[in-house]
Length: 162
Image 1 (cartoon, rainbow, N blue to C red):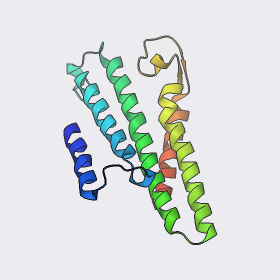
Image 2 (tube, rainbow, N blue to C red):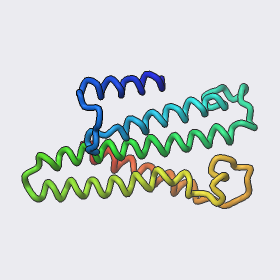
Image 3 (cartoon, one colour):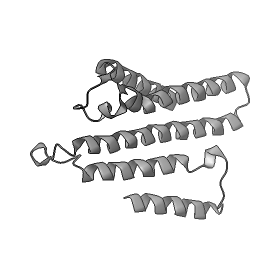
Image 4 (cartoon, one colour):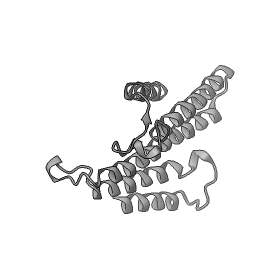
């Protein structure tokens, strides 16, 4: 799967006949983030994610969760960059001031909300290792508040998609 995504990005650049892409609207950042997400998920499945609970080695579960959280960071960040790239494309064709203001609001709010959502996995517990290994002593934020913020970020994502 990872090789397929990498080759798909390579073919896309060849078909565009443009080997050096510099603009954010044409960048490969979202593709690279999705590729990193796939790699992290593949690694976490190696350590037990996706197996039946009777087949799990619970000593490897913290390591699997760590790679899963890193993968989630990449996918959320990649989605935010992809949405931003589309908004920048729309900014190029907008003619009215209110449209540009609305698009800039969408860009700034999307990057701030999704950026916070992507790092929540890492800043919600002290020490960070407690996020993916509950046996480590430490302190974490309330799980309900993290869930509610994730739902809020998803609703914001949906609003900017329409």
